[in-house]
Length: 186
Image (cartoon, rainbow, N blue to C red; front, side):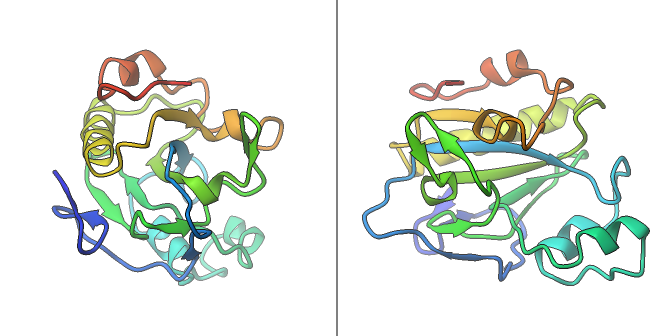
């Protein structure tokens, strides 16, 4: 798995363009990966709801929860589904709208300098072994393409009190054993 320098996308995964992104601020260096978790509807896995949500094609009448999120415009750079399949929505050189109001160290607006990776899951249900495996592979590709990336944090870490994902079910130890050299859980 590699990132194509011409497209700034993973070369071996399907791509579906999300409109929920924009240019990063000039001279911004990508330094952080943010791990998220999502299931749509909440607690349900499979289907195409996440894909449709990130591309603004989710039918709000399909499920009561979809009414609550009908006006949200969000994305992540990519999603790793429970079966290990990956889908990319935003090229890594663009700013995906994944972190919202956030802070890493003394820096605000984490979307500006981070890559957002969504895991299909919930805070309380264990993630799959293949998701950790694929996440490790993606991080390796990111580190090769963007050597400036040095840290991986959860959404809850950069938006405390506002977000809880990837939650207590996420095994940071499993991820730590898969981190590329020069990348830390800090």
